Image (cartoon, rainbow, N blue to C red; front, side, top):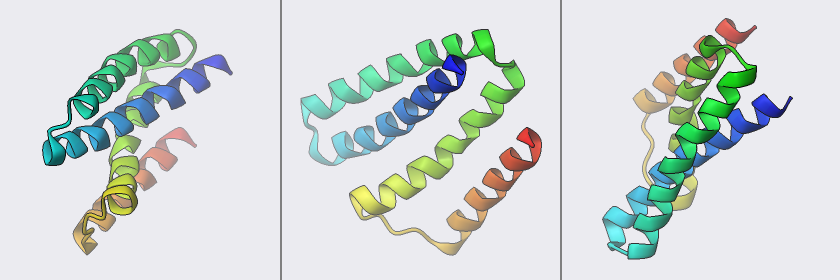
Length: 102
C-alpha cells in the first residue's frame, strides 16, 4: 500500500514540476525554478521507493499518466489551449494504461 502512495507522489511531483517549470519559463521567477527542480529531484526518489513494492512494469506504465496530468493542469492552471489531437493522444495513453493494469 505504501508503494502505491509513493508512486502517486512520484506522478504528482513530476507533473507539478513540469507545470511549475512552464511557469518559470513565462515569469523567470527563481522560486518557480527552485520548486520545479525540487519536484524533479523528488520524482526519481519516490519512484525508486515505489519500485521496492511494485513491479517495474506497473511503475513504468504509470509514469505515462504524467502526460494526462500535465495536460489537465496546464489547461486549468495556466489557461493553455488544448486541441482535439492532444485530447485524443492522452485518452489513448490513458486507455493503454488501464488495459495494461487491469
